[in-house]
Length: 401
Image 1 (tube, one colour):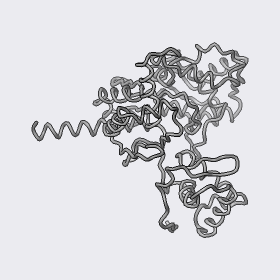
Image 2 (cartoon, rainbow, N blue to C red):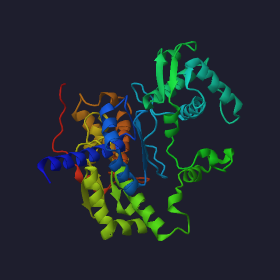
Image 3 (cartoon, one colour):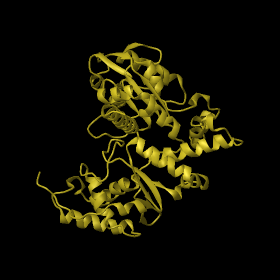
């Protein structure tokens, strides 16, 4: 093989690996929002599709003419750590009302290629009024209009809505605002990453809140794995996909969190070989320990959040407090440590200087640490998990800038 051919093969491998990690971080790539990432996935879509299908059982849809790539990440586990967020300065998560309006708005958009914000609001009002389980949408309320605008801006960020004329935010101040949209109904249909549509569930509406886990299991059921009497082929396929979904989606894969069959699979010669192979093809560094393993992306492409990271006070506090969690500690011990840190660095963490500042700082830091699989919280104690040993603080200082 010539030197040029070798270089082309290496370049393709690197691009495939980069495309895999970009899709893990952003399962919906659009040509408009991320043209370079979309172009890479468009060009290397076949090997990227094969990687996700083989290791994770996830399908990748690439629409070159429509300008988007959608990775359908299916998992039955409930994960509240990635809520929809309002595209405002605070980035607050969606509340129940916004999720309701999102679902109703999406349903109403399926029937129209073009609409205005006023017509869409009227349709949402009619739809919520006709459903006894929903509170009627009131355009006379500024709070309601703001929630509606948050929903529309989220759909704009996905590329489902394109503003042709006007500005969505103007609807907050006036229900008579004029905004014209173009609707991409094909992309809208791709947003729901569920093998089974929620409308196919036979659980009565009034029982859904009490049987939510069953609803989630119903919409996440994948027929390829069979049922109770699945074949050995289907069972091995499920084992492979369930393990790799955890590897690429969770910060750390702890063997203690796996079933006996999953642990046996990933510990087998075949499982170990596939893990190393997947890591290499995806551009990850495989880190193995007695307690578990993780895919490390040294370029931090495959994640939407980093740790350690000095971009936020909570993450800095999490790293500093983690140094004190060398064994089981109480929340009160961490609170006293947080007070000491606030006293030691008076120019740091200005938003946590109130009466309950130390309590809130500990709470926010623990949310970071649990999210990254570094500590576990029981009723009375915080315990470090094995991955916490990867981190230590050599010196802490606050800059004037």
